[in-house]
Length: 236
Length: 382
Image 1 (cartoon, chains in turn blue, brown):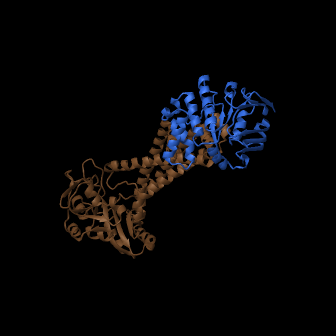
Image 2 (tube, one colour):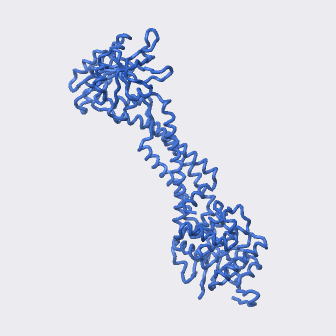
Image 3 (tube, chains in turn green, cyan):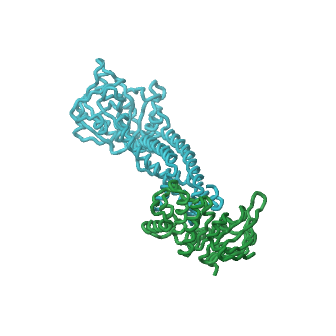
């Protein structure tokens, strides 16, 4: 059973008087515990697709279903609650709040839960431990390196224990060595913690860490590639 | 971390900017409390003044004296009960001090007309019997550290003695008013006869009298004033509350002035604080987008902005009111006699109302904007 299902999804934006088609009739599925890399040139619609899966945006037409829930049917309030419970977000530029420490940033999504103060703190510390940053819990983002900030962002994404992580260029702002560390961390989350990961990337090396890769071009899904060790390619 | 802790941290994101803005607002509330206290002081006195007491003074100004015989003529008017008179002495109790309210009065009739002034029969008898006697209200006793039985030297720029020495009165008693708000406006009283003999003054400052029906006050005033209309000492008669209003009006419409200043201060603060909040909101658009991404609903982020704005204004108000209370306490000893400024309950309620209102008004635009923020657009503004 697919965890994420996109059926005939179209997305267009108004730009002045023109209408820009970003996604054209996209259909694809992501199974539970999958690790999918979305690749394609700039403007191909990768981030838009990620936003639709993450419930940050709504399709112009078509259906986005996550865990049997049709996202278009949810009100904005319900969609917000669903995001807080079901999705973890990791961004290229980390998007940590500068006034909060690493632990407080990780704790932030837990303010939406019914957990008590101590439990929130404990869960945040556990998430930081998973990403290997327990010793930096009291540091603000300004005092952390790019790689450390991205680890904090990943800890924040997993702290509420969502099934799905959507990652938008998570290594785009990092050097190669740090990028590999982050990608390995995502792999561990996928393999050992059963997280389903959908990752947008420009970088073919980064995509190699995923179980499969999807190529987008001009708003269309052009191919689905299995990773080299699986050695298969499926034309769409 | 609690939600409140998070809000506090967010609010002080730009510590210097927020602190300076809060200091401005604190100053506005400090001014508000000080000015309101002055306005309340004057309006409180007028509100408590009797309407069954009327006053006849010179038509032209209270500094012009009236003939002594006017007393009998006023007493002969239908509806008039008891009549007394008083004269402004302008006494100073200490060298270099401002004049305190000091009146030369007829001790036998003064406390009959001012029956809301409470004096013991023992003190009243002593006052009536001794020509150089004086009685002082509790506020003046306290202010100048006076004691019953002592001699009180008082200088007067209006009635200086021939040898330049101060007048000396025997303080034989003290009195107070039933109306608490009047406590700081009660005069030091001494015998008119003493003034008459020592300074050769036969005319009096003004007449005060009681009437049996407040409804008839306008008619009685008209009868009395018409009696003296075509003389060199024409009069103006009115109820005591109206006389108080006129007295304060000589200094300008205090309430209007105070409210005008307060209004101008808060309007300026509204613009400045709104500017700070909107600036703060714009800087935090990416952070708000992150909050929404994490699952904070539109209503929640709007609430955050409103609470932050309310917190900003109410904290500033609380600090401002605190400083104002300390300031009023501190400046009290330097104010002229009869001026005691305090922070009243209604002033505090007004302060709280303004703080909350200001918080809601300046938080409204950021709150609405935050709730309407489109996540995918806002995330790209970082």
